[in-house]
Length: 226
Length: 226
DNA sequence: AACTGGTTTATTGTATGCAGTATGGCAGAG
DNA sequence: CTCTGCCATACTGCATACAATAAACCAGTT
Image 1 (tube, each protein chain N blue to C red):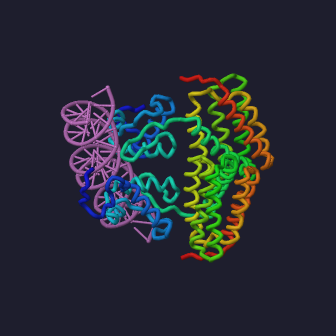
Image 2: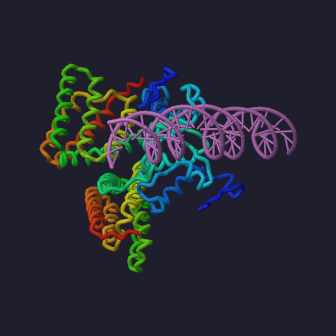
Image 3: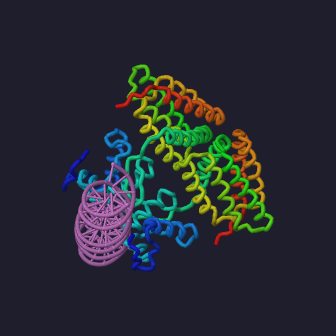
């Protein structure tokens, strides 16, 4: 949005986000939504003109997106939207699984009543969404659930890493299948219980199972490209 | 080919690294070595003048270092060398352990003869270093060993992440203790064997043990701050 | 003396300009 | 027709200039 941040209509004079952040979000959205397809070259000057900003914020946004895995940069050659290969997808999933298992374990270890309440709340909401067949909203609930576990683990860095990989995995698989079905959601309840009871080993095990099944569901579905 | 190296100080010809990368390395070295202590503000213009470059490469280097965890940036307020708290150290160790365990497992699963050979070579060299009491060199061998395992896992992203966290952990603990002693090295042999034999479960288990012991060794030593 | 208000200053955020390099096309030779 | 070398072009890397903002400072008032 905000294609032309002309003079005064720029968000806020006091709490305004930097152009770099805005450009970064905009480009990420375009990449995730498929407007900028994998392999497309990202020319700084072109994007700058299109977004009505200078090259500087565009350049920094591209660097940021490279760190997030959405863009690849070749020195002196320029940037391009990252290609998503099956191999890269597996690599990401491997990393995410490892991190998520630790998150579950720590969450079971360090959970606070507030953490447990939040998990239960998300769980309840998800159940309603499943019952209502609102699959689109369930995707959001799914993200929230995993994020809540990461939060409960009390490792800010881990939370950030997981969020990053989740976004990326969502992107990679977004062209392959609609995810977060009822069966995936059902597994969440057991995970929440293990965490609530402080059963670290079981939390680890259930998370690992959940993720490998989740991955299997991804891969088994036929492509439903946009 | 323009073979006119006008300015002699620039070590470029056709394979020159970008200034950004050079500045990044330089700053990282200064941070890790303690020349730039935690909490110190990093003012772009000051650093630019000191390194005889413009603000642009300095700025991008600082952003890079933020992603690596060496620097924290507050929007509109500037950057500073990251403070190293005990909590952050534990968080890092937690993440690194999780990643390293997966790396060991995958290495045991996908190892090639070349991987095994390299592990054995590093192991042999390390043994010699231990025998000779060359502890400084052993630190390097230690890094190489863990890096070789990551390589063998065949997940480039995992390798990069691990390298990043290893560097950071080395930094965090560098002011606390000299690490990589003989006892730590002895544990490597068993890890290499498990990987060589393709015993994934044992590779996982040994790695987990090795890292927790390693962490314990770190923490038990008295501070030898510079 | 403490507090509020404006003012100054240091530093980041953004824009623009310039130079060097990689790339694609074109011409000429084999 | 294919290959090799030159040349035009486009883009990045870096430098510099300007604008905006948050912190520090100072003065005036209560």
